[in-house]
Image (cartoon, rainbow, N blue to C red; front, side, top):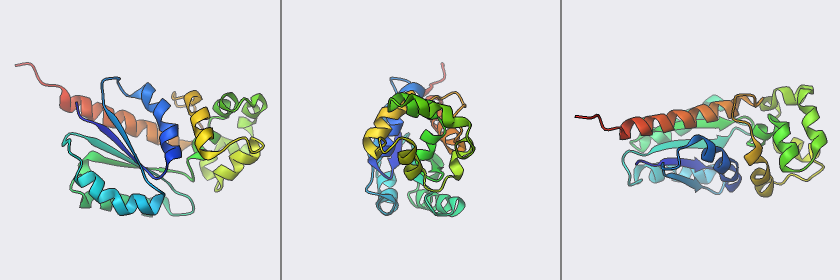
Length: 197
């Protein structure tokens, strides 16, 4: 079976994805996570990593933060790199707006469970957390909200298993990421289905 490959700008993205992928991807489908040392490293190595990937039926999801950049410009640049790799059709690009932590701010019940801070869940109805993708400094906001209990690696590992995958997360970019995972899984399964002769 072909592999679902994630190309990620940092280790905390992998920590966030592992429990999510466990829920969305069939057990028998191979999954690989390739983490880089930040966005420049991701962009520098992307073409080579995709071009020389051995399994020709694999599909790729490229995930990076928007930070202070322009979402459309970043996505087009990453798609151009995917094109350069020769496997553009196998690639989907997803941007976390503004940061990975926006996904967590979109599901404060998961933050409350993962970091054992029950009162945090009640803040979801407050204005900034109703649309977390608009919060420019999501990581700082999450630290402040959790009294500095949140840290990138340990925090993403603790919160992710509790994220709801039913469309209720207030982060639109998280929903778009889930849709990308489901789409790539379906395409791999479709490619691996041999019609009965």
